[in-house]
Image (cartoon, rainbow, N blue to C red; front, side, top):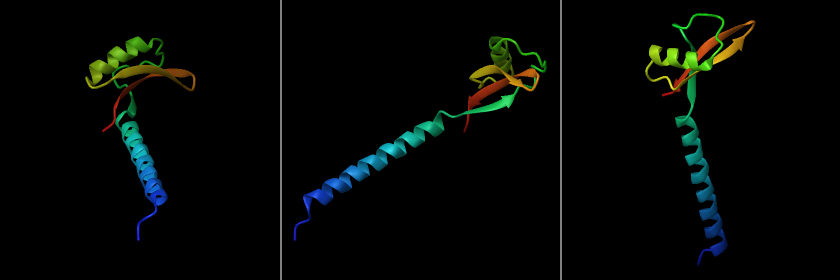
Amino acid sequence: MAKSPVSYTTFLALLFCFLLIASNEMQAVEGKLCRWKSKKYTTRFCLLSETCASECKKENPKASKGECIRKGLSRYCFCYKKCK
């Protein structure tokens, strides 16, 4: 008996969708950034993210960016790098 061409086409379409979703999930994990509070930029009055970014790169050469973020009444420097 021959298999139905409809079931074969459905199987291929589902397989294609699964592979497409799986490849998107892998890309999302690779681009994820980890954040930590800067140890060198200790002031609670971080005003310029550019200054914070330069301090983060001095602290860790693998840092991709730095950003001033409000926590309570203060603004702290947080550094970012790609997670492993």
